[in-house]
Amino acid sequence: MLALNGFVQRDRVGPIGGEFAAKHVTLLIGPNGSGKSSLLTGAAGLSRSEGQGEVRLAGQALAEFGLHELARHRAMLAQQAILPHGLRGYELLALGAEPLGGVSDEVCMAIARLAKPLGLEALYHRQLNTLSGGEQQRLLIASTLLQVDPVINPDAKLLLLDEPLAGLDWQHQLATLGLLRQYAEQGLAVVASIHDINMACQYADSVWCLHQGQLAACGPPSVITPELIAEVFAVEVRVLAQNGISVMLPK
Ligand SMILES: Nc1ncnc2c1ncn2[C@@H]1O[C@H](COP(=O)(O)OP(=O)(O)OP(=O)(O)O)[C@@H](O)[C@H]1O
Image 1 (tube, rainbow, N blue to C red):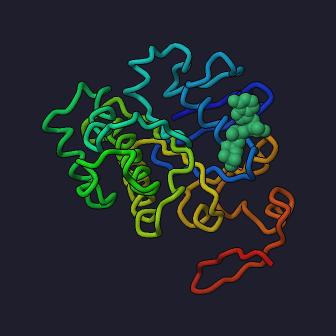
Image 2: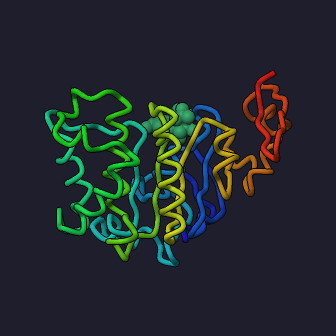
């Protein structure tokens, strides 16, 4: 769905080639500063003036998309989203609905579908600056997902999220991962950065491991080995396996 060919983002990431496939959840891992956010913003077309190489979404060069058109085809949750002061929860969701033409009955139904997993109901009327970090993050995730809700947006193709699980408790981490899977099953290419390597290996169809701006490994979760972790993260791990599930723990 999104193909990168010799993609370079200044001196921060690349050259990188590969594809984020439709119906796949691709999770990006890598140490701080390894280039995950740079790759995501480049894939979103948010830093076109700083990028080189080719990025194509559904066969069309990203540079050819108008901004409004792009907003219907892909959505991105930024790592440090700036929240307008004084805005209330429902107003942030309305912003997410803007590329869809504003809040309609269909959009309200889409919000209702997100409300339970993300625990939104208690947040609709709260001012964003009075919410906890995790509560803000849940609203930001909802606003981003709404933009490319595959049920109401036939143009939706790509969902990019920079550390969506940051600040979330376990219940909402799992709920968010469940929603990412659901969006992928409905046809989107879903790409997110994540720092929990075990969670990445458990939930991803594909894992991309970045190291110093380069792809150190990519493929099914089995490509993430203790040797790779030692090389990329400078952490020695041991593997614990039980009932077909294995986790890596720092030694
Ligand atoms: N606006 C910027 N100007 C200059 N350098 C930048 C800028 N943003 C990021 N960098 C640098 O680019 C490199 C990649 O940063 P990036 O934010 O993509 O890493 P990351 O993998 O997302 O890190 P983290 O896990 O800490 O979020 C780092 O060396 C960083 O210092």
